[in-house]
Length: 129
Image (cartoon, rainbow, N blue to C red; front, side):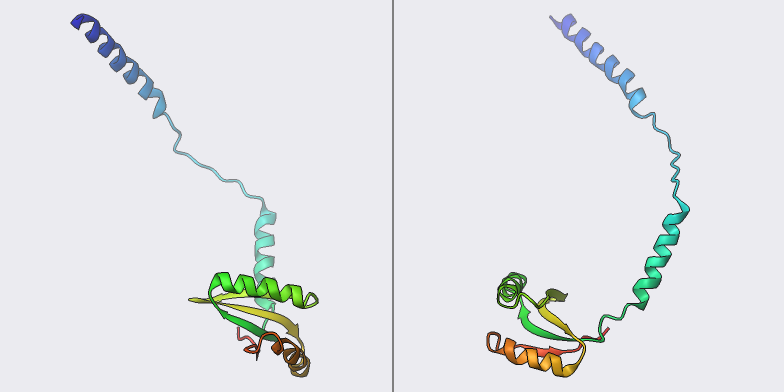
């Protein structure tokens, strides 16, 4: 019985020794081929993003607080004011719900009066870059 165990152990060791030779045979050389248009598109995107002016419009902030409450507030707002867009903005450690994109302050103030009926703590903002 001991001889049979030794043969099994020898067989397993021999099998493992032969199989590890193939498992470490990897090629170290890596080559990446990239289309030239990719870099052109990336540079164009960088140029466009730097010229976008997001903060030249007025917005209304209707909520300031936790993520779950911000999502709930935005969902309720979209049901009540379907014609206005809204978004959640994260500024560590809180979330803000902003709505609207008004070109003039007077348009934003008119809408603010309507929104304050439901959201009394809403305020008019002009985000900075």
